Image 1 (cartoon, rainbow, N blue to C red):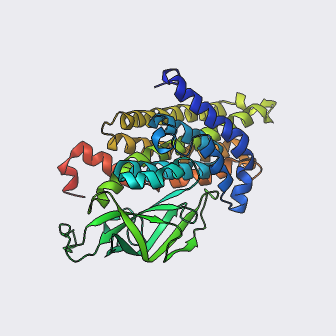
Image 2 (cartoon, helix red, strand yellow):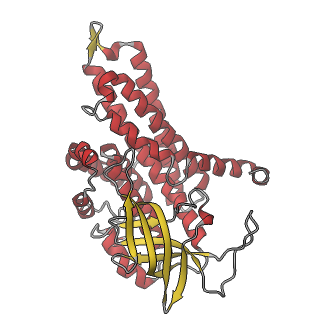
Image 3 (cartoon, helix red, strand yellow):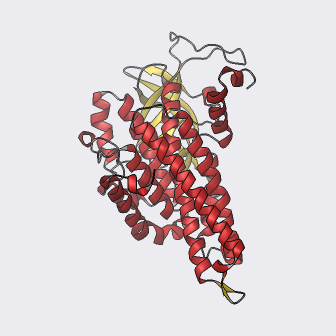
Length: 395
């Protein structure tokens, strides 16, 4: 799919996000990175533009665009700053969309409009210290308390965890009467997992720490603790893992778009430098080795973009997209990590300094191979779909 195949509305949203990124984000991104500052005011402004709920229906306070339009916006925001891009991506695909899909009418009316309009932020709390890629091993528990539950446990690597107003938290139902899950590989039988909505402020919800990260320093990544924290169920009892995995299927497409945006930013700065930097009697862009790097870089970014847009179109059409989303994230994250490094190589010594943003792109790109499913997990998803039970029997 090329730019010419986008609808007028999709091109307008892409242009809107690009213009906002260039004017309101990119000039400040280096400072936010140095200061480790979460730019709350940016998300308020994005809400006013309709980009905090791009693919949320208008009746719920969103802009009512399609999923591909949202993906286009994530790419452009991430091109300006990866931290802003991931905050909007998680807010939309990991909070708003599962709330839209599984919330009851009262939850939708109360919670979705302020999220879609950027007045509030959302977070997705699944990972735990002992449950990362193996999400089914989570230990956070939920005990019935009147019409809701009380949640106790620890969640790790929660994007926007220090600032979110609505959190989707996954916990085991410990009511003593629920059916247990089938025995796992260790022979243990565990209580089923459900999804819950937690509002901030709430009793017992505490930020244990804000993570010090390699990159994405303008985003928040927190460890949260819950101690008898009130929550309300989202979706059916025991449907937590289905909700989580379905959410990640779509979320990976957003992370692929983030990776494409970061890689595109690296290509932009490397191309501009190659035109302006003189060595050996002229611009280094006339040197074959530099030209080859730039040509391969652009080609692989375009391939990653095509995979990402394909997955987005499938999701928008309501068609299966698990494998396509995994392929997009696997490839786009690898492209971003590799070519941001090669952008530094083109800039030489300047690329290794903070005078140019290439080193920030390199730091920001790496995590796209890790969160919302590591590259190893993406390969497993793809291989199992390709090989079926033959793959499961030895994994």
